[in-house]
Amino acid sequence: MQRTESPLIALAILLAALAGFVDALAFTSLGGFFASFMSGNSTRLGVGVGSGSTRDAAVALALVMSFVAGVILSSVIVRARPRRHQPVVMALVTLLLALAAAAATLVPGPIVLLLLAAAMGAENGLFQRDGEVTIGLTYMTGSLVRMGQKLAAALMGDADRFGWLPYLALWLGFVSGVVIGAECQFRWGWNALWLAPMFAAVLTLLLISMTAPRAAPAR
Image (cartoon, rainbow, N blue to C red; front, side, top):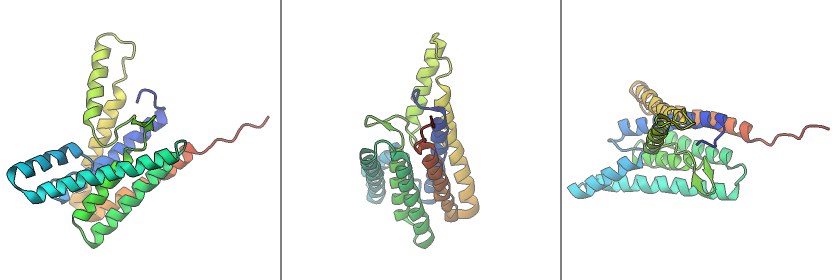
């Protein structure tokens, strides 16, 4: 994240807010499962197996697999279009979110959560360098660890005294998205989910603009 340009960091914060929004809708509407927080779903899987709740275990496992499928799809796009993969990956996220919103309108249920998990998995392909994710957009534990490490370094006198701020901003973005998602779900139920693909579409257009080739200056 330290080598990421400021406009892209701002975009990452908006994407983290989108993930928080989606996670809040999933959690509050479908029995405490998550669309982006796979550690939570892994815990639900283990508890389900240990307690004999096969349904909960099956739902949690399906969500983890769907999330991984989204990661695979975005990774294929990154490999196929290494220079300008971000708008294409974001378009995929938008499509998956739109399908989830349509499914929620017609047949609300587990299929919605699977599509949301796939979308959140794909979203993590937006920031990759040399095959590695440089900014985790849907899991905040890593951001909090990095924030703590940067704070410790600053307290011990390192020159980079404010390197922890981007990680704090990313976490706050996610939490803000959760708050907005919970409020929207309370007011509009599943209809609030349509806000996610609309916002994702705006971010797709923004990425197209940000990554468009610049014309060479005339001599």
